[in-house]
Amino acid sequence: MFRANFSSQVDHHFNQLKRLDKLTNNSSLTTTNGQLTFDLEIVVEAEVDGVGMGVLGDGTPFLTLRGLARMCGIDHTTLVKLTSEWGDGSVKAREKKIRDLIKAQGFDDTVFFHAVKKNGTIHHAIPAHVCMAVLEYYAFEVSTDNAHALRSYRILAKKGFSDFVYAQVGYNPDGKVSLAWQQFHDRVSLVANAVPAGYFSVYQEIAGMIVPMINAGVDVGPHIVPDISVGQRWSKYWIAEDLEILHGPRKKYLHDYPVYFPQAPSNPQTPYCYPDEALGEFRKWFRETYIGSHLPEYLTGQARIGKIKPAIATKAIDSFKRKAIASKPR
Image (cartoon, rainbow, N blue to C red; front, side, top):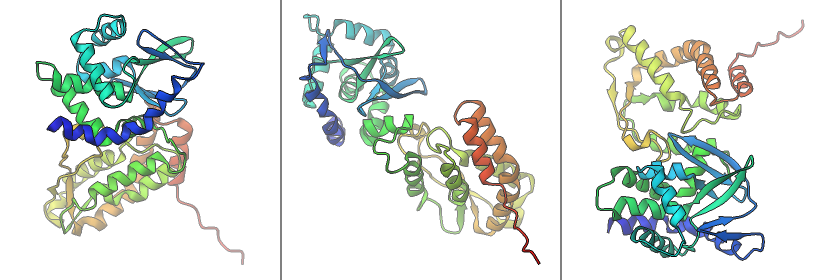
């Protein structure tokens, strides 16, 4: 019953991918030994928490062989062996079950991966329907419990494979709405009713910082989470200045990250919220101390580790500099 419920949630995500079946009739494609070879390039790719993933030129999201193995909680050599045996004529029990799961989604079970060239090297791009079939196999069909595969399957089933990969690699399929804006909206929606009456949350209060960052080109989202930085700094200030004596005690509340955030598996989170009486104190500290001193350090640090391009970090920092009011000539 559990598996059936999750399968129904992901069915509609595969409809958009079924166009790939039509591609197999194109003369520029060849199918050999369980792989589909065509002239598409990898337009964006990333490794997130050890999971390799990306998007092909036609918008097809994929996982790498090692990435899929990591999400399944197995050694990648297991999948290497599976791909080498795929379609060799001797179908074993594991391959047969995975093939059945692929066909149940309405896809061609003869193709396990797309062979894509990048920098002269062949890469294995595992499409959504194959990834979900393999994950389903390791989550539900193997004799031993695999909590890792089950957790991965739940995440992808809830968010949808395409949306998950697009969010992780920062790919915007239609170019109409910035992905960072969508992720910002997702987080705001989850926080909106989570904070108890009489208290404020750090995340709700720093929208005035996040918006200019997104406008400057910072991909605020799963891998750049500035409210963690603000929350940690403010918490230290709260304790150091004994603000509980002045404003009353802070308290924890339940907050969920969107399912495609790396923090999501440990939801719900329990950050602090603060009494409304301290709101003026927070805003003054945030404006004068965090924006003035800590934010440039944060953005420079993100650029140093490669999460932001240095030019974008500089642009974002400059956007927070106060504009001098020109005096009128007398």
